[in-house]
Length: 303
Figure 1 (cartoon, rainbow, N blue to C red):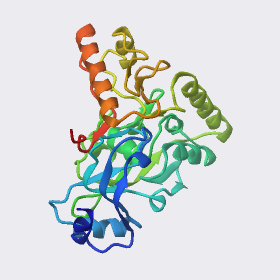
Figure 2 (cartoon, helix red, strand yellow; figure 1 turned 120 degrees about the vertical axis):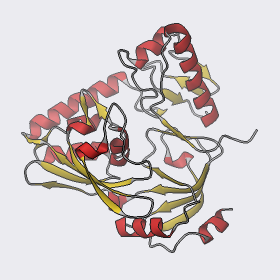
Figure 3 (spheres, rainbow, N blue to C red; figure 1 turned 180 degrees about the horizontal axis):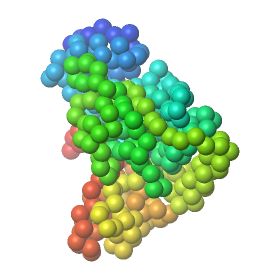
């Protein structure tokens, strides 16, 4: 199937990898294979790929897999993963930072600190890459992407480039209204001038807080559910008696119960089923519907 699919794809300077294990590309370390993984060489290569790929072939964009659950049956079509040529970070005049969509959020915060640009420290508390932060208005410790974004660049399904200003992103809590087919490739941020040592000190506080309160050294996927209006998900989950709950080798973290953990041999099916059980228990206990924050993609395993 993968060979037939590759035969329908345009020639690229990047790389096609058939039957690529997605478990190797996600923090949960679970999931079936992508039919084809495409690693574009640069923006022009990605644009040519998009222009030349038949529209009936499904395309899925992934980052570093920090907030992603890939189901055990794998992912149909082509999975696009941006690499190092999309990860550059530069400081510009007027306390601005320009970064590629594959740049790690932490690296954006570090680069801003080195350049003496304050306001992006919150990115040190977000696992993942910038593309995902743009798609979901990622935030932590009281700040969000919408607070610092000036504009971003994306390619649509036809390979055309679009420059989207902040107001065009339609940001709300953990959500953007940017078209679903847009692939973000770059963003420009506005901070304020600050002392690098002071900025790093604030980043250290974020890191210390995360290490003390979140299972960041486990096989996890970050916050599992969005905070409902007027509530905190972890409190609802705790009150429903789900802290530490286990299904197979999947577990609700005992340290922070809005995190799911792969204890070593969990399947995506077990993790997703545990998450759905948590949702059911919270609904029964508090009459609140938890919404997944982790992105779930792919086919369920064949029975």
